[in-house]
Picture 1 (cartoon, rainbow, N blue to C red):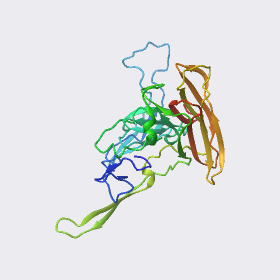
Picture 2: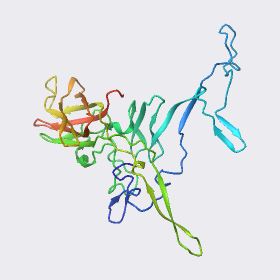
Picture 3: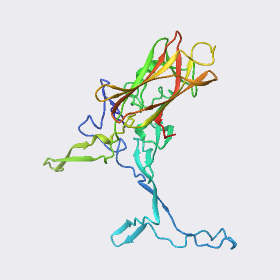
Picture 4: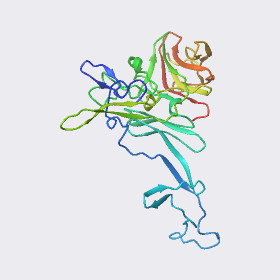
Amino acid sequence: LDSTGRPNNCDTTKTCYNPILDSKSFNPYVYGLLGNFRANKSYVYYGARKEENPLQATDIRRDGTFKDFKPFWSFGNKGISPNYDTVKWVWNSELTMFNGKGLEIENKDPLGRFNSGLYGYGKTLPVAVIQNSRYQENAFEGFEDYDFVSGICDTACQPARHWDFSFFKYYIDATQHHTGKYSIRVNANKEIGLGANVKLPDDTDPKMRFVIGAEDTCIHVFTLDSIVVTPNIILPNFQPLPGKKMVFSAWVKEGDVCSSLNYANNAVNIVVKNSSGGTDTAIVAKPSGNIIEGWQRYEQVFPLSATAASLSVVLKSTGTSAVYFDDLRIHPFNAN
């Protein structure tokens, strides 16, 4: 599920729509919103061990137990209830996001540090794992799974991606690749670019409301008129946070035979604009470092101001030959 209307269904006229936000009602079990239990928080027990004398011989079969143990769950006449003992039971991980396949894509620890993962191949396989960063703050593209299909409607209604180069699918090239099998080709004196909104995360809990009507028939009285959800039930795509220091990295290869120590006929323009349309940051990045097996690396730090509203990244060929880009990454400076 994502903010551009995916997962999608196709009708007979091959018109794509969002079954969750665009239709009057939908089956929440089909789209992974309900029906699957997932871990909310994980807790670790802190307590002294029974053995205190390091000089005493160890019996590995029996030693190592807790000196005192207090169960997390309290059993009473009305069932079980959690016993939130913040001294003994300390939580260390909380699930904050999962995708439509039921896979965990974001969690956080007690210090408020987020970890996240990006999934490709129909949102079934991880393509990037990021520490100290929210799900919406990261972007990665290796151009490997744009031909991956999993159903009869995929040709007309491909699911949108976290950072989507589908409009430039024609330029995905199998002749050059830094990793995997593909890269994206930018023809001579041409450019390819993508934009992203810069916005704060919506940390409110998503809500789902079932609207029940009445229809007096011999079979039943109540009807399900509609299912209403809040927009934040849809996963955000790449939407970095304002006020953050970010890093862009990629690998580039020029079509001409390498004849120098540096590729000079390519560039990446990074532009950050505010809500008034003014430019807060404009950077022309260039590759640096050694050319390794024909590829040279980009690594550019750039700021997102507190007033930033949009980010654009433009891959450019500035010479007379094609340029190939691969393994594009954007993430916060303090993430890895």
